[in-house]
Amino acid sequence: MVNTLPIRLYGDPVLNVVTTEVADIDGKIAALAETMIDTMYEAPGVGLAANQIGVQKRLFVYDKGEGPVVVVNPVIVESDGEWTYEEGCLSVPGLSWEITRPNAIHLVGYDLDGNEIDVETDEFEGRIFQHEMDHLNGVLLVERLDADQRREAKKLLRSRRLSLSAGDPDGLAQLLGE
Image (cartoon, rainbow, N blue to C red):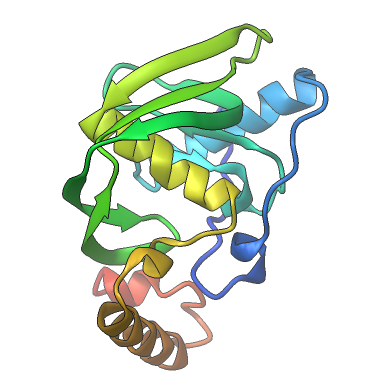
């Protein structure tokens, strides 16, 4: 059974709050992870942080094309290099920008069985990790833009929010031309 939750959109204050660590990896966390995976695929996206569905816990899910992975209490312990790539966000649907981030990263965390995850990666997978870590730290993609881009993005997002009809509160129907 597919179980999804609405993805919180730009402007929702829950997206700007630093999440709290998961104290116990239990059945509730496993059920949350399954819901997050279903929500990520439904969106569709390649990653989703818990606070994007309104849960202030430090975990994210992702799928770079090899099946879903859950990372609990992730920490980036090292980063190196620089890589610019066009990046979008499920909380800012329909928009993307060239974002420069470190190219290589070293991430540690835990899986749903409590086993340590220790990954050194770069490029696309590294970008997914950094993007989801930003969410867990209360940082949105728009905040990664330079001052001029940020001003333009916020203006666009404000106008989009003001033009939404009551029947389309998240703006997706308008975005999809429905």
